[in-house]
Length: 254
Image 1: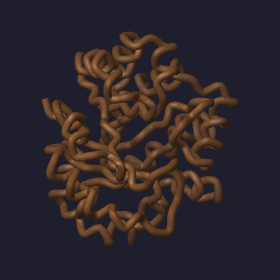
Image 2: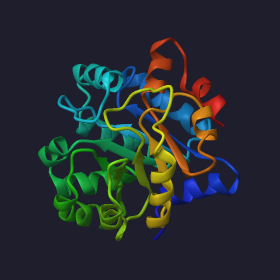
Image 3: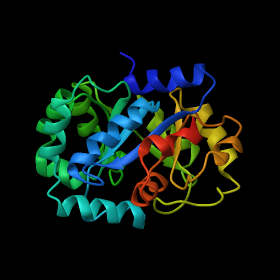
């Protein structure tokens, strides 16, 4: 069974576009408005929507995402709320839905319970930023029985040998981290990124999505189609904080 995330990304690519994967923390900028922003992203053509599971001790979130997530936690956003609200809206989004977060909240919720409830909520994929490959087998197995893909994270310092480990049995897409550091907007991308993206494309037979550091569409044009999809979060959050809407933000990227 091909992952809905793969299908949506391939659809965009067949139309000659880089698939778009916007990220928003669940409950941002408020518990009610979050669902309106999600609907806007879906209407605007997102292939996959990445929903952050707010966590108080992130290792990959830059200041913009971390601040937004802390505000959501202060507003009592938790996994129970996220999954129950998603379940109530199951089938209403054309975009595939992906959860992103950290291992601790998932273990606290209960791995089997999480996999079941996420499947019931229509989730297609999961990213756990602090999960080592060597500890991923049991989580991958629990998710697989509910047709949820564990999306691998690779980056500039990932060797070809280690990429091959991640690629074995991977589905959905591979997330290529464009910088050595946390999330956040950058004006330029590292020089070696073209070479490493080409390497990842040779190793993975699923789409490659580029994330971390993207702030404007011109950065994608510079890559000449080396990635199949683009993930952006901090730039979108900043746009909303400045009074904009998700639908407005998406237009230049289409």
